Image (cartoon, rainbow, N blue to C red; front, side, top):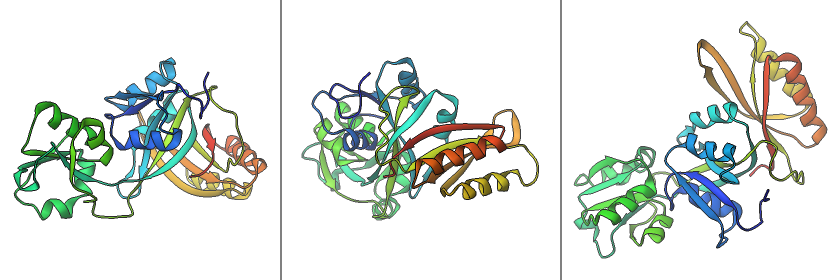
Length: 282
C-alpha cells in the first residue's frame, strides 16, 4: 500500500489526459515522473478500479462553483467502499485550442464538453460563424482534432491538453466568469491510505432519516449542538422509494471530539449514516 507523496502511484481519472481532472491530480500529488494517470471513460469505471485495487486512488470532481454538484459522484460515494482522503480547488480556465499553425479565422467548428461550452457563452456568441458541437470531454476534443488532423476545428479545453497532444492555444481564458472553481476529491478504497490526522478539520457524511415531519430539522439541530459548522447540504433520491432522499453534508470542526460527537448524535437519530471521509479543507 502506497501513501500520498510516495512515487509510483497509479491514479484513475474520468476523462482524457490533459483534462481538468488531470490538472487537479498533478496539483494534489505533484508532477512526479512515475505518477501514472489512468484515463477512464466514465466515473463508475474510475471507482471500480479503486475498489478492485487496480489503482491506488482516484481523483474526481464533486462540485463546480458555477455548474453545481456532480450528482453521480455523490451516489457512487454512498454505494461503494471508498473514502475521501483529500480535497483541492482548481481554478477552471477554458482555452480555444487547435492544430499548430491554424489561425482563428480558419476555424469553422468548436467542440467541447457541454458544461465547458455553457461556461463560454459570451465567446461563442461573439463568433456566430462557429458551429458549436458538444463532445464527451474537454481534453478529448483536442485529442480528437489532433488525431484526425482537423484544421478547421478547435477544442475548448485546459492549456494542459495543448501540451499533452502537441496542439496550440489560439485564445486563452475565454470563460465567462473568472471566479470559476471546481472542487476535487482524492478517493481511496476504504481501509487503505494514510491515517494522518494533522490539520484535519472537515468531514463529509451521508445520512437518511425516517420519512416523517421534522426528522431532517432534528438531524441538523444535532449537528449544530455538537459544535460543528454545516458548510454544505445536498440531497439525492433513494432508488425505488419516490420522494425519499439521502442527505449529504460537509461540516467543519476545530476538534476531533466535536467531529465524534456529531457522528454519534447523527447515528442515534438517523436510520443510516455513512462517514465519507475526514480530511483537511482546501
